[in-house]
Length: 353
Ligand SMILES: [Zn+2]
Image (cartoon, rainbow, N blue to C red):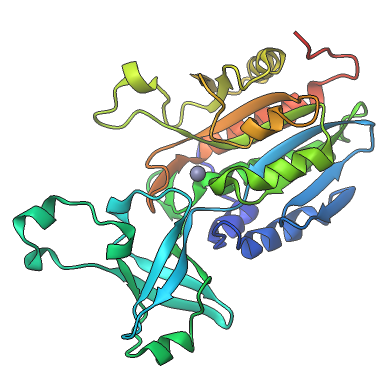
């Protein structure tokens, strides 16, 4: 079956939201969730909170809206810009890209430059450049001209949007984790449509600053104070050439939402997620996570006296590159499972073990 991205996912994917500068994504979340949420708020870290229901106990969904980016840290005498990384890039991907700088007066366009291959010696050709060896060229011919457009501390992302590859497969920048934030808020909308859960308030949070250490979720989970928390993030699809399943397990694109299992995950929540997937014919895959995960689930679980935590993943190829590739069927499976799970939980369900 062919799935179309839909207006909300398209709008969210079109936003440029480098860590710490998530304004465009929060505006898209506001426009989508404010009209149907029973409560809606924001905080000093830039998180967004939308709730359905008014029960004492709460289930929190966390989907981060920040994406990896660049932050301008130096402008040289010729008007070239130098930068540091917001989140973890693969340096081999940094040069030869179109860049959009989110400057005060609007978007400034540039390219990431580096010495051409013809001008390199044999040793240089084998090296991965360090970040300071790459620059952004905005077409300025002097420091003054560049400074009139861009200021130190402005943030940037690569310029490449959502593009359809095949029936349900799309390439984009920053499926990580706008696809997860989409699931959190789309599931909340479906929960509202079904009348909510009388036993649990459901709060979807668009968390900020995940890419530099789950910082939005850190404060958000304290203020929401949930009994159950589900983080929704992307998960490495390992079905690409040369990937060793003995090292990385096997997660396939298009084979369904990934339900993680391991010490970061409450075992009762895990079992319930699997049960819900089976009961609703939602395709799913299981992923082993031996450590605290690199997602909002990491901090959610350790909040206050502990939160019964689950982690849903959307299979993704080429994570943290401008060519992230996902299957819309998996995004749909994730949103469907999240809604089914939240509606299934009852007041006296016990998540201790
Ligand atoms: Zn990430």
